[in-house]
Each structure stands twice: as structure tokens, then as C-alpha cells.
Image (cartoon, helix red, strand yellow):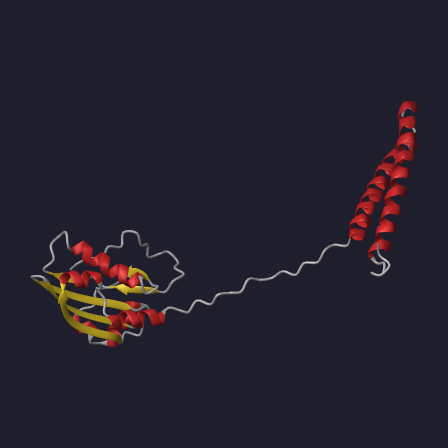
Length: 224
């Protein structure tokens, strides 16, 4: 048996792409340096169909002939089973791609040069069947967010309102000092002066808010 090279694949990771299982490969006649190349070539070809590849269960000949037996092993995922016999420079390949229901999707038996096998280790039929299982990617058009220019009058009104509100809050604080019988004369005098200042800024802010509101809602033909 030849275990597939899946050191970088974690079975517990949630995959966005569909998954195909690769049964342990029966690779006969390959030496220790060639065996990893076979596993890597098969895995790369499977990934080329748009699938993530996970190590699958062993499916022996008796189980392979029984769709129910295969289905129990697959958890609704396709599985590729390969048997490869190398004789000299040639390889005999027996390949079966099972669907998630346990029934064969494709089956192929072929003889080819070993070098050619490493370049294309999976039959064209299996490639086509796996590619058809990948959901089509639908490009979503960019979402256009409608934007309108804010009328300058609204900005002026907002700014004036903020100034007016802040002035009222500050004036209330100074008024509290003026009314506090325990506050000293110097503190009362400062509060009296700043209170008048805040009354002035309130008037300016209120005027700006009112003027901005009028400008914002003025008919377009009358707007400056």
C-alpha cells in the first residue's frame, strides 16, 4: 500500500471547496524514491479539478463491487481508487471514481509509459466527472452605494446647533455659580462675565442654525 502524501492537509479544517477522498494507492513495482512522486502527482491532479483532497478509506475488491459498502465509507463524498502496477518502463493502471452514493462514476483500465502517467495520472473521464461536481462560481457585481452631496446649509445648521447647545450647557453651569450662596465674590464676577459670553455664543449659534436651515430648504432657483 502507498499512503498519499497529505502532511499539509488537516481533516478537521472547514473547506470552502468540495472534497474528494483518495484511497491508499496500490503502487506495485515503484521504489522508495518513486512512490512519493506518484502520490504527489495524483494529489495535484485531483486538486486541479477544484477539490480539496483528503486521505480516504481503503476499499477492497469485495467492497468496491457493493455500492452500499462503498457508500458507508464515503460520507457523501467522491473517492478515487487506484491500482498501479509498474513493469519496466510501463505501468498498468486500474482506476475507479466512486460517487458519494457509492456507485462508480467512472472506471478506467489502461497501459501507458511511467513518465506519461506521472504527467497525467488520472483519466480524462475522472477529471471531467470531478470538475462537474464543483459548483459554478458566480461573480457578484460590485454593490454601488448611492451617495448624495450634503447641502452646505445642513452643515451650517448642524454646526450652529452644536454651538448653541454647548453655550446653553456652559451658561447653566455659570448660572449655578451665580446662584450659589457659598461662592466667593471673585468667582461670581467671573461667572457673570462668562455667562454673558456664553449668551453671545448661543445667539450666534442659534442664528447660524436658523440661517443654515433656511438655506438648506430654500428652493433651488433661489439658493445662492
